[in-house]
Length: 402
Image (cartoon, rainbow, N blue to C red; front, side, top):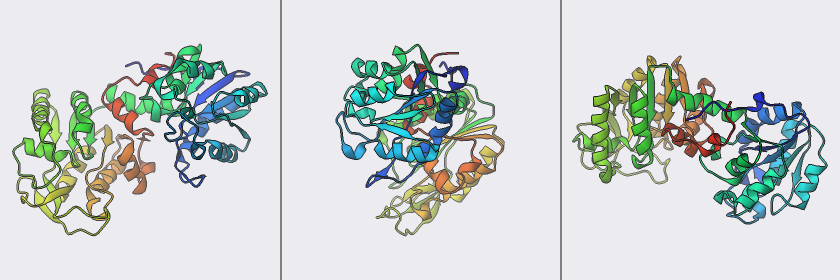
């Protein structure tokens, strides 16, 4: 997996037209941006390109317009907010075909250090199919391409892969660089002991991740709903807990693989069980703690118990690298969030490099206020999972090697 990519620090964009793919896929409510984390995260790369005297042309997708203009998914509000955050105008190029007459005229009129934002790249149906016509349109605007959108790095689209193949200079921005440095290198070249913690509901979502991480890590910890299929594979009664019966044999294979490779595989030793799944999800629930080998047939495990919390926290203490992806239980419910909180706390207290692999774990860490205690919180859910699977990400691969 080639991770040694040219970045914005390796090039000089003075006087050049730079197309920069960002992740501005922000939540909108009545035309207002309700969470601007992704905009703030993009600022360092944009500021660098402005400071170098580039003509900065920004592009991104937003939501799923499915290849046609949807006014409610226009990037116009993003241009407005970015102008405020940067303290200079970000001119919005309103074009339903993205690279239309308006965008071309706006680019022609640019001076060094100017910034424009193109319309939602997914207004074009070619975007998600990596169709050549749209890639050529994007490439016609620029001399240099910068990809700073990790959230879509696992997809081969026009605005991250197609265009990169049509320009001479294609590099990664600071956000992408950080993801490659932390996530990519943690898996490919970790400082040991390396502990991986996987949670979430389904074993099926993490098959390749489990398999790949067992080869790479020293200790693999499994919590969340997916743990019960493993516990069943060991012959335990798991009551009405979540289970994927078609994956019991796979779990047996993974348990055997860990033993063969001399890796520690840690599974929950106790569980917080409930009778009925909470409805709504944050409704009060009555809980009972049971050992993993003594679960009543009519109850379901919905979080790791106190003994498991201590076991998992202890495994993290001596680690040098920890990667965590997926909650330990139904963390949307305050009563069933203790396990996830305990893991977040253990990671906050360790000296290890701590990497949170996007999605629910990132949300949990931030919600619990531990965000600033982590070395790196990934910005991509699907992309970070594929990194952990050891897959090459098309959006990373398309950038020039050093």
